[in-house]
Length: 374
Image (cartoon, rainbow, N blue to C red; front, top):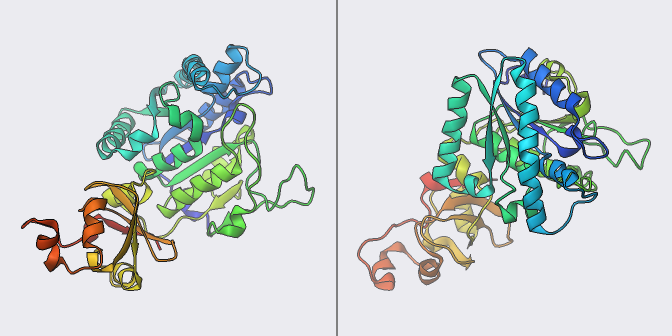
C-alpha cells in the first residue's frame, strides 16, 4: 500500500495556507487554528515531532490596514507582514499553551536556505527545539525580504524545510480536497487523484489557477513543492485544511492526494546541493560527459565540457545540463566560469600552461560535491 510509510512518519511538516486560517473577510479563523492545535496534541508522542509552516500574516496585516485586495507595492506588503505576523503568532501561542505545548517563531527567507552555514544553523535550531518539546512555527520573513514577497510562497519554503530536517511527511493544507484531474469548480465530473507516483507533465497540466487576492500560492505552487519534497524522499499529502483530521492521515487512510517519495533518499550536503533554490549558472556537457556522470558515476572533467552559461565563482552551486538543455546533475564547482571557458574540452594536464598556475583541481566538479538528478 502506497501510504504505509505515512503510518511510520516521525518528522512531520504541516503547511497551512492563507485561505485555510482566514475567513472570507480575511479575519483569522480561530476555530481552524484551535483544531490544528488539538489534532497535533492528540497525535503527539515521544517519537513524533512537528513543524508548522503558516501563511496568513500578510492577509491579516492587510485586513488590519483596511485593504480589500493584495496591493503590489512592496513597502505596503512589508508593513502588512509586520502587523500580521505578531497577531498570527499570538493566536498560535494561545491555542498551544492551553494544551501545555510551547511554540517558537522562526522567520526564514530563501537566502537562509541558499547559505550553507545558515542552513545548518536552522536545522540545528529545529532539532534543539524538538528536544525541549517545542513546536516551531515557521513563516517567510516577508517584512524584510523583497524577493520573497514578490516571488516566494510558503509551499516552496515548506518543501525546502522538509528536506532540510529530513522529514518523513509534508502535509499541505489548502482550501480544496486535493489534486483533481481538472478544476472541480468548473467541471462537476472532476475526479480527485488519490495517489501520484510521479509528477510528470500530465500531472502538472491538472493544476489551474492561483490563490486568492490575499494569498500567493495555488495548485501549481503546491505541485512544485511536492516535486521538490518527493525527489528528496519526503512523502507529501495535499488535503482540505478546514476538514483536517491528522489521525486519519497517520492511519494511512486515503485523505487528499498522496505523492509518493523516491525510495532512495539524498542525504547531508548533497541534499543541500540538489535542492538549493539558487543556481549560479550552467555547465553544458557532451554525450561522453553525460555518460561519465550518470552511468559511470564519475566526476565532471573539463574534457567533457562544451559550454558555460552565466557567471559564477569557485564553490558556487551550478546546474549540469546535456546538449539539449536537460538538467542531469548539480554540483559545487572547483573553477570560476571564466577559467572553465579557458579549459573546456581540454585534458587537465594542460591546465598549468592555460591557467598559469602549478596548483589546480583535476575535476571541474568532484564526485563528492555532485548530485545526479536523473
